[in-house]
Amino acid sequence: MRVERGNILVVDDDEVAVMAVRRALRQHRIDNPVVVANDGLHALELLRSGAVGRPYIILLDINMPRMTGLEFLSVIRADRDLSSSVVFVMTTSDAPRETPARSCAAY
Image (cartoon, rainbow, N blue to C red; front, top):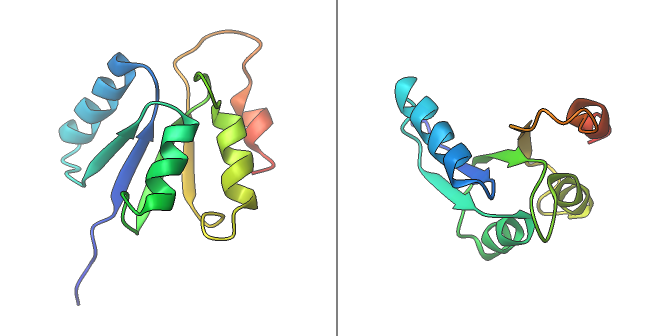
């Protein structure tokens, strides 16, 4: 039986956070291909162009310029081709106004 290795799309504008994700993946011996998008619009371009091959998972930051993580989630959930994407939401912010779990529950 052939098991296909999935791609990981990291959507985050913070280079330090991206480095931390890469380091964590390495430490856990996860060597799947990683593609990085610096905001939601860039991620949509990559997904729609096929630059991120299926299967894939998305590691998504909430606070980003141009298109936030929540805006990105709204777009992909409304997109017939992307609506089944597996998304893990992450944030490094400790701002009390940010409650991603509450905001993302509907997605």
